[in-house]
Amino acid sequence: MHNKTTQLLLNIGHALDHMFLLIFATAVTAMAQDFGVARWEDLMPYSVAAFFFFGLGSMPAGRLGDLWGRRQMMVLFFVGIGIAALLVAMTQTPVQLALALAVLGCAASIYHPVGIPMLVQGAARPGWTIGVNGLAGNLGLAVAAAVTGLFIKYWGWRMAFVIPGVLSIACGLLFALCTPRETQAPARKKAAAAGSHEGISVPQLLLIMTIAATSGNMLFNFSTSSNYELLTSKFTEVSQDPAQIGLFLAGVYILASLTQLLIGHLLDRVALKTLYRSVIVVQLLALLLANNVQGWGFYFAQLVFMAAIFGAIPFTDAMVVRYVDDAMRSRVSGMRLAVSLGASSLAVWLIGPIVKASGFTSLLWVMAATSCITFAVVSLLPQQQATHT
Image 1 (tube, rainbow, N blue to C red):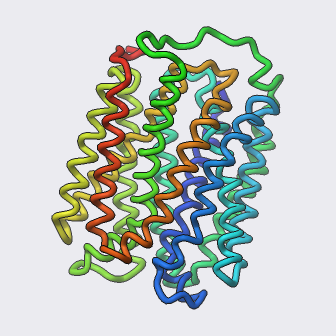
Image 2: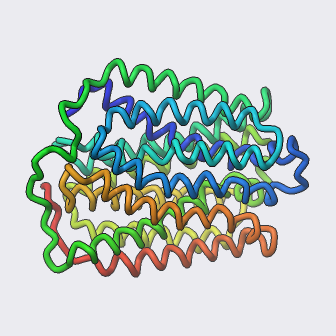
């Protein structure tokens, strides 16, 4: 079990990881105007490299986490993503922006395969630990939505990258000072007995995890990368002020994030398959509702579908903890994330063309279909009882 400072910094790291990836989506309209791009939809494809490398980098990051050490990799994460954010703030053209965002994506790829296995190492209640960590990550989305909107209004989009970048570098230095050095890399430790997975082979389990994570991450990317513009288009009678829209969206993220605490609590007590499918059903129904309402009705639907999208996030990490030994969790997570996040980066590229061609109605239908895929894949899991009571 890690000391409280290390645990806090690991959770802050998750918040920063998600915050940096959302700043662009929140500031895209202001950035398009600054770069002389006619429509924000035309600038969205330039961020695809960030999400692609966010996934692709997970594999080498996970391998290094197990074989070199998780502490060293987390220091590299904090400092690397901070420097990358400063590079984004200095860009002057869309091509420069794409390159800088790619560097940011590489740095961001370190956290999930390294930080989460480090956090749950020796945890007495892994489900709850994952839930709290998930809450921290999604609060990063809320901070990005609120703070970026305020920066755009008063200081410009560049400062929305500069200040968090400096903060991240400071966290990296503090992490290096406060976290004890590892006595040996995780891969060198003696493997313990793996979790039980009767009724399904390990390759089948990994395939289900990867497909479920891919569809879940596509939904996450579809929603978080378009929510600001989606709320702007559906909330016209309430507000069109960028700072106010940012605060309304931050409210969605904060309230929806609390779902992760509930899911984390239930993961230690309820059968994983039953709980997972229940969350996906709520997700699907809320997306269908969102496609048919405006104003405050849409705001409520957005809150519910984001709560269900966030609520689905802990499940793949919970499966890794339940079925995979700690000595190789970073590598397994890295392989799963490389495929799922790399493939789901397509969602970011698709947002602009889909919305430009047929509006947000089509985007919400695509999200609903993606939710159905997740439900079908999760249904292949064996029915088991929770490992903790």
